[in-house]
Image (cartoon, rainbow, N blue to C red; front, side):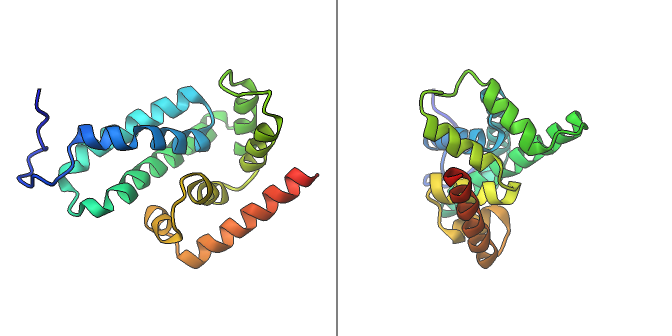
Length: 174
């Protein structure tokens, strides 16, 4: 079966299948680091790729594909976390809810003590610091790419990343 190019005549335009193949794994881990739960990550990823499918034909420059897909995934993570916060409406903070999900997850390698401690330290960051840290450290994105994804200024992102690193370092040393 030949996949259509979503109405575009440009033979160089990416197909949905190609986008999914290229970004499925990195986007899953980007989402997973933000929402923690494997099940929630799968739900958010499904919503992300539905939006990618719906908007792919409108993408004008394929050079912007990575940033565009990450922007959609990041926005879906934020939407999910906001819904989660509204549902819990309790004395638990977002940090507490995410730490509880990490603790309850069967998809965590508890033998990797340092890795778990790092994840716990990351979850104690603010949402912006966590996003910037994850995109810079794990996804190896430039500040310019992160700026395109988040709509924040590069200088703001550099400060957030610096604060995140310092908080993580202090958490791991204590």
